[in-house]
Image 1: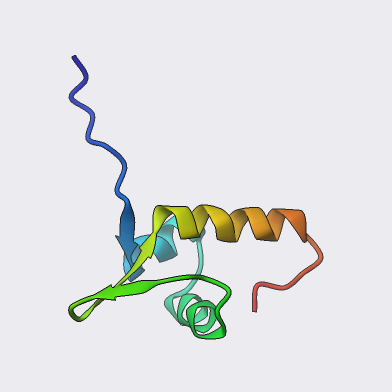
Image 2: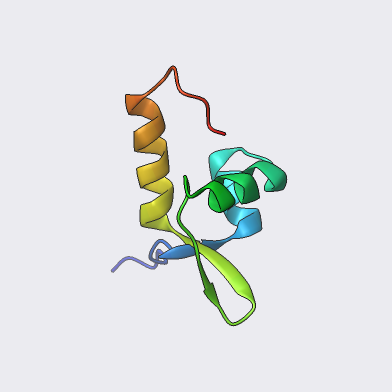
Length: 68
């Protein structure tokens, strides 16, 4: 039996920054520009694990493109 916790479905901003290796400011710029999807629950802004994967895949398919 595995005691490993399942991967989170969504991340708060600080964890999303760590996972992407980006600053908080840049992460918010990406959200504001629509390049990174996010949602809110109450006062918390969250980014789904799926949105993080999509963001990375889009950047991999366009390596010449800038993140901002």
